[in-house]
Length: 174
Length: 308
Image (cartoon, rainbow over all chains, first blue to last red; front, side, top):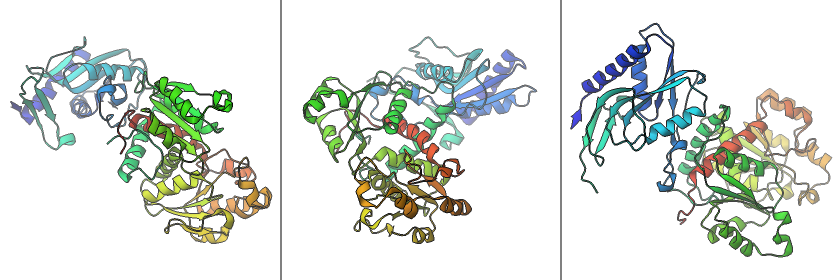
């Protein structure tokens, strides 16, 4: 199954609309999780920028907070994080492309707490594909996909991948 | 392919060097956070095995390991059985039983870290072995230079001092050539090797060396506790011939050159006091960058990986 750039744009619209409905004109900080979460966050930010409100934008790399180093042949390449505003007391919305096991979000929460103590943290995802392994749920969801655990969900975004689509690749359970 | 050990610069490919230098950037960014620690090496153990005195390199590695959440154990060589005649091999067997993931070694004998690396599954990092190599010093020097010159190709670094006995000169000149920097040596004739890489210029006079128009002047430490003293008449004479005197500092400032030194500085020997306040001295940058680079190395190495 493949979703198009129109589907993605509609999903980003839904995220922006839900965030606007829920937070009114209160100051918020969008923090995208690398990679691709930052690109989703940037798009949501563009849509919210029309409003008269305080918006902050940051990027978070969670490589150093992963829980699976033991199983990796090579440690993930570390990218720069950039959070150019104080986290203390902020209303943060973490943004990622795909929500699956929840482990990335767990790592992001740990990383975030090393930058400061936000007043509140919410989660926005472009795609929720289910199969959580931790008690983590999104506050804002663009698209809900029903998948099997062994399937692959491949999100491609223009700036990161040079094309715009979401593909579900059906795999046989191994 | 990840490496198990870091023993010298020669065995690193240029891409691996660029990777480590790139990775040090996000590690350095962590230093401005209020929490400077990340959990990447949580539960891993790092053993510090320093057979030679070192305050800076030792504490730099220790800070790097702790900022990655590793546990650090100091194997206090001065008070250990080694002074009672235990062989290095016996020590290694003892260490092996401690199941360290990383061993940081400094020793006066060239090649000893390599011997240890072959005897253990732990990742071994050479923190200086005799006149052989000091790879993390080389990486931090290259990183410091790249901060000032993002494309360092064709930039010129003049290394001054006892080239012959210096592992810093050896490792740093090797890495600089690998990233495209031109290197020249300046020192007393007796302390600059006559044979060696063809693409390194050798000078014995400060004036000639400056005519080569370096971008960075890199002073080596005069090893008072080691062999250096017998090779030149006096420290005052050394300062007059090869040191950055006040007059030379004026010229360096006028030309806008950077100054580097691996530390600790012998004031009045390699450098006059005024260099400490020179706006283009990178000596403190080198210290801070050393931690970031060593974090990148610890994060990159894989204990137990197969070395070819």
